[in-house]
Image (tube, rainbow, N blue to C red; front, side, top):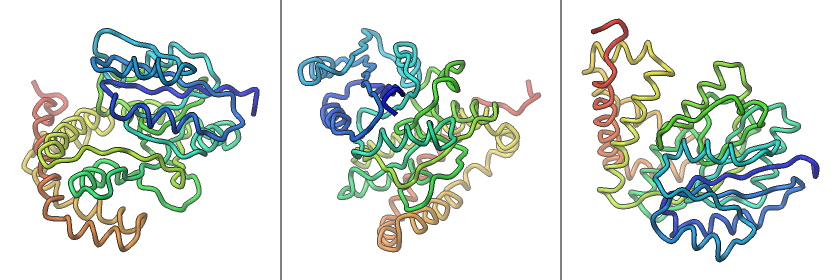
Length: 301
């Protein structure tokens, strides 16, 4: 494995509060792969100074103008030439086997692209935990062998360069990972999830902060679904009242993932939080309907 190179790319914007722990977790990796770490940054806070001062072995690619997450990922890809490319977000920390597990699946496991699981970095916060459930329910950690997946989550993802080199992330900060997943899937790439390798994600907390973010996620979902599932979006655009029923689908759907992957104790917490979770899923729905209005049915004027 020593002759296989890995680049870990971190898209970052104003990550001063979290970037040190993220990079410390990458310094502690136990891996046989030759690994470099690249921070692609467009921060206006002290993030670049922290990287330069505390992590001289980390390569910093800094832009003075704001870059979306998708554009930062593209810049990271262009600035590296490794065999394997891994992505992690600046508000995440990685377990010591993250690089080894992700890269091994790409080199000997037959995968073209992989993602890991998302762990809850704010377990003592109700709003943070609710946001975690709703955003990452597809990627909750659990004991299962690597298996095919339709979606990759950008904050813990990896690719063989030969597979991704002809693709570009969309110039957006929400949904760029799902759109990339769709592009690769259409081209016949093998996408694999590794559910027992979980990074820890520091979730947003605070009622208003999580509420507003759910609106943004809902809007982004309507945008990428307009590409990945056009027939569904056409039906919803013609009968938009159906979209208003989304919380009735979201609540049991998320709950089933929490139950099957995290167990009864976590599911019981989900039930306790369900009134607030319903409010947050309604915020997601409001964002989705807002985005839906921007995508008229195919063939309409």
